[in-house]
Length: 84
Image (cartoon, rainbow, N blue to C red; front, side, top):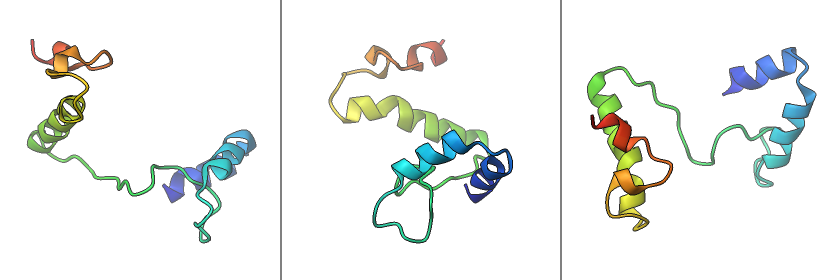
């Protein structure tokens, strides 16, 4: 994520940098910008198995949270498109 911030600085994308500074958590004293979600960690997907695992997590998260009973019923899900 540091590289993204560096590219934004190099491109002089000040409006975006200002927004990322606005979203930064107050307790974060070692950075000026908040790019990703707190606690999320980027992970490279290097196999179809891992990709399938991530998609399953995304599809079933609304079910796990009790919003719907099937992934296909979640309004914003592409689960119904990926089953065919």
